[in-house]
Image 1 (tube, protein in one colour):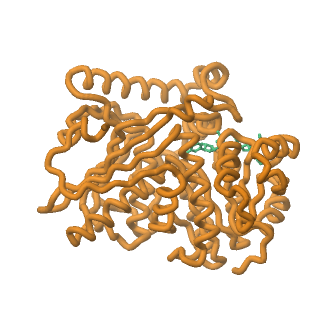
Image 2 (image 1 turned 90 degrees about the vertical axis):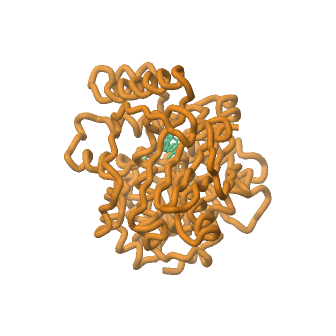
Image 3 (image 1 turned 60 degrees about the vertical axis):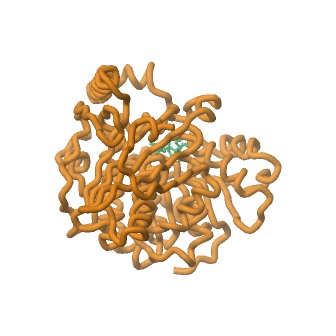
Length: 426
Ligand SMILES: NC(=O)c1ccc[n+]([C@@H]2O[C@H](COP(=O)([O-])OP(=O)(O)OC[C@H]3O[C@@H](n4cnc5c(N)ncnc54)[C@H](OP(=O)(O)O)[C@@H]3O)[C@@H](O)[C@H]2O)c1
């Protein structure tokens, strides 16, 4: 479906914490460029105008679009005006469904920061087929969940194929650094995901089934069930350090496996994948890993219990619109290592890293590059409409943009016999 649209990108939810940051980053990226037409939107005119007034002179005249995520008429008017909607209005299960519906029906491309498997699957099941007809490319999980994992594995497997003619049948992702904070929307998503009143068998499956996000007919494979409440710590020989479960692992892994299935199994149909957080070496590393793993599970338990939930919401977690201060955001950093193993072959590695607070600064830079890619690379993106992952939809196009513009770095190490925690974190 062709669009005779007024805008290339509308950043939707620009008054929220990540929305404001995304608006700043988009304004800085666009500078005085007039060839990409963009606007900001949301439900509060005054707040949107305040956001716009802080974007600098080049963005002083960008239009402000009004609407509400539960008012379909306003969403239909929005999607009729733009080629891409980039949404930071979440938790998406609470606010995002009508917007995806409107985008799909009008053939408008869409990207977001959703890290909510249950909702993503709902959108895929409801709208995937229609999106294929209308040409709308729908891409979820375009922030720290799950671009580094998704594009990191894609990058590693491409290099492995080029060098050795075959993919790695197993990849393990290890987080070696994750420094920063998180915003009110992330806290709201966590509280929504742990709400005891919303617990259903389907929610249980969304959390534990490793192939939950794979397309229908592809929901099986060699990986074991995810356990959100695991406190297992393990010594990782390749990293030379103790690891604990990585809290975003179950979500990221589902996206990586979905990419493999969507692309026709370039990583192999027996591909195995897992994620963990590197903590440290020696006895102190082991004790710290166990203590942190237990601490996280205790935190999840308190987020699920009615009394402690309300205390967390009231006194501990950031509220909507709040998030880490500028110093935390700027001094933040993240690094991951992907270790790829082949049957009877060498071990290969990819080092992927990003500048700035992973969950806010770096996330918003990844999100806006995805939106820009959906707008500017529309004729080169090799897939048509449908429900995609970042790697399956944009692959190399997005990889290049993230490297050039979003402070991400992807490095490949061909053959690696000795790894070691020090080399991974240096
Ligand atoms: N995947 C990742 O790595 C990652 C990282 C960070 C954040 N996130 C996700 O990003 C989302 C946003 O986080 P945040 O911290 O920016 O949240 P936030 O500060 O609470 O902002 C939420 C935004 O949604 C808007 N909104 C709420 N209800 C609306 C409605 N009915 N119609 C239109 N707009 C509405 C709010 O508008 P008002 O200002 O008018 O209230 C605000 O602009 C969350 O889902 C979070 O989980 C994901």
